[in-house]
Figure 1 (cartoon, rainbow, N blue to C red):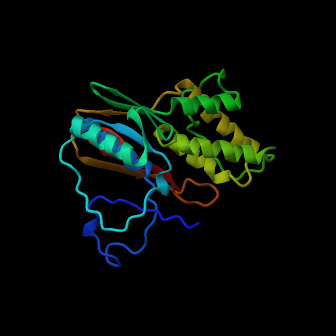
Figure 2 (cartoon, rainbow, N blue to C red):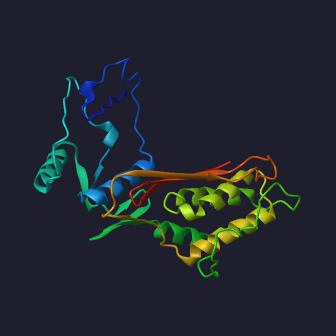
Figure 3 (cartoon, rainbow, N blue to C red):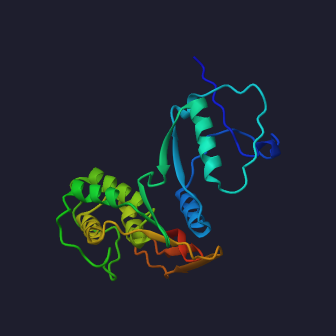
Length: 260
């Protein structure tokens, strides 16, 4: 049976078909947007609540136009009224104040918001047997330059790919491992024992502080600052440079990248 799916868009009535939009699709939020929202919420002292909609994509057919304005302010009574109304209509789970979202652990104090992935990091260490390993002070040795070497191939390349994939998600809150994981991700097809040894070091570095993350102080000024840098043809295989950048909202780091 064909199922009709509806989307409610704030101020969608300002859009004109074939001018402001051409297709409809499901929006998937980027984690950069999530971090930016949390940084602004910390500065503005906004309340953060989390809801989960049961069967979100199976609700209701819209036969009429719907107009919607975002209510002014951030009023708790109004928030509770809206949550009750939504629950009466489509059945939602009120998860209360935002604490755990997409694997991110979010804690709020009087001075700001802290974000980490401690549980996710501990799961990686436990699954790989590194929970009791000795830690190291850096994720990669400064003089190390990974490349396509002639050493023996790693016996289990699928395990290497799976671990690097899990580390890539961990870089959403751990920019300090971003460069090392970027280096490791270049050898997914044919990893060698030397590449896996470098992967071991990243895991041992995570063991040093699995709960390390980001801190968004509420004293930040809402002003964007960006920094960038690059090396000079450092890649041994391609003779390309590696560039990196980071973007701050006040004192809150919200976006970063390391790329060949």
